[in-house]
Length: 103
Image (cartoon, rainbow, N blue to C red; front, side, top):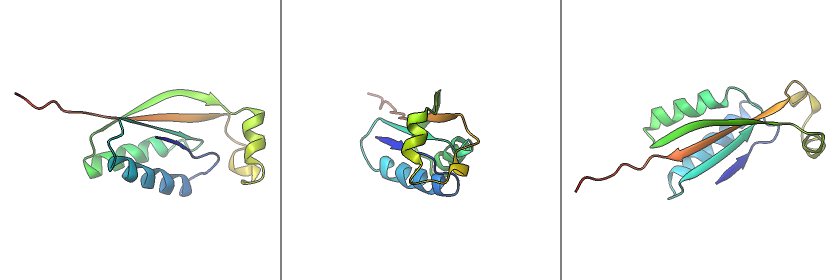
């Protein structure tokens, strides 16, 4: 599963991410990638995983630079002030932790 939050900031980014996390938890999926400009989202996801006791490991992947092409794609949907202060997108990967059952 892949969730690109584009230029959404909190609280909207958090709301979308938490909804996606809940939906992902109800699947058999192994990995979910979340791309965001919101720097606090990793903390929010970690807290939600712990609060719900979900079997996920949250990994921070290398940041992605925000290119002129990405900025152009956001220009009609977002105000420039939503993303003018950021240079990179944070990339988080949730990996389902599978516990082996003893024989």
